[in-house]
Amino acid sequence: MLKLKSRLNMAAQMVRKGSRLADIGTDHAYLPAALILDGTVPCAIAADLRKGPLENAEATVKNYGIAEKVQLRLSDGLKCVNSSEVDDIVIAGMGGILISEILEVAPWVKNENIQLILQPQSHDETLRKWLWDNGFDIIKEDACFEDGKTYICMAAVYTGRKTEHSEAEILLGGFSERNDEASVSFCEKKLHRTEVRLEALRKSDPENEEIKTLEKILNEVK
Image 1 (tube, rainbow, N blue to C red):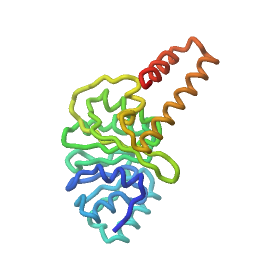
Image 2 (image 1 turned 180 degrees about the horizontal axis):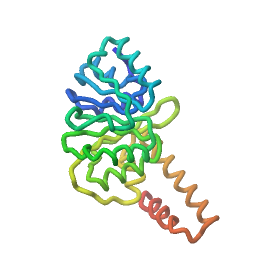
Image 3 (image 1 turned 60 degrees about the vertical axis):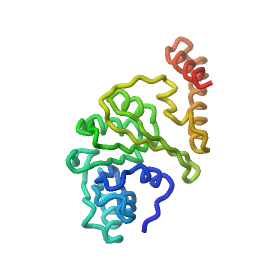
């Protein structure tokens, strides 16, 4: 068996049993390897933009004797994958802007049978807004600690319904309604950065329209 650290394990917990998995930006392919070894998924595509990580992935699947169940692909985002061969797609370890761009150029992910499992390292609000603007529902969000840092993960499915949300909801997602330690830590850090940004704008550019947005977010949360 392969034991995942907290960040990847959080994503693994959202993968549906029996699904065909694509892990984009797989690096060492620990996530697909662990899910195959514990019987969650029967097979996986492990894709990465660079040859080095794919070589690491190849070593992992050979070491665990699962090479025949994992397809290794050199790929820029989802360009090597199509809707007929995957059910769950994991994109982890990237910024929310990059994840949004990867999804934007793969319109086939707008499929009600496909679940996206996304773990933005930054700009999660950008990704959240992109999902809602493009007809996705965020069905689950979770947070965890690893090596002193807070990480989040979200699962989304396509419904075709574009939904509007407040600026606070875009910034914090569903974490403002959770009271576990990791979620509280996530919200506190996001709100602190918002307050710092607001004070900086008030001093340097008091006529900036962003001030009203930031004030609205903080008032809504309070």
